[in-house]
Image 1 (cartoon, rainbow, N blue to C red):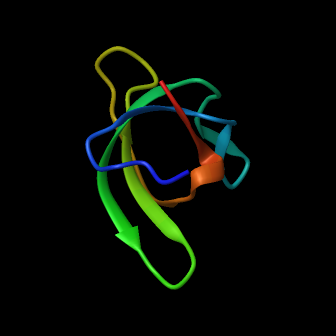
Image 2: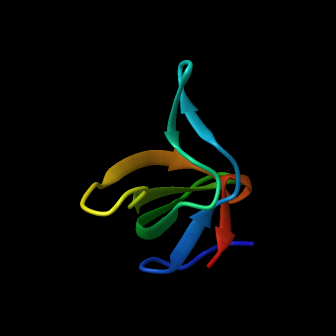
Amino acid sequence: MAFPALTTVRAARDIRYGVTTAVPLGAPGRIVNRQAGWGTTTYTVEFNPDPGSTVTLVGLKDSDLQSA
């Protein structure tokens, strides 16, 4: 399922950077960019895992996200 830009989403799983969990399961976020390519769409998402913090991740796929 392709999400349009500026859609509110949640992390569908723990998103890790190495051994560190960058974004926990269910963290709210907003799609700020959508890049369509040959057979796949990737997203740039700003997550707010904790009040007052923002984590921006690039290159996420549909399987990393779920509708909020």
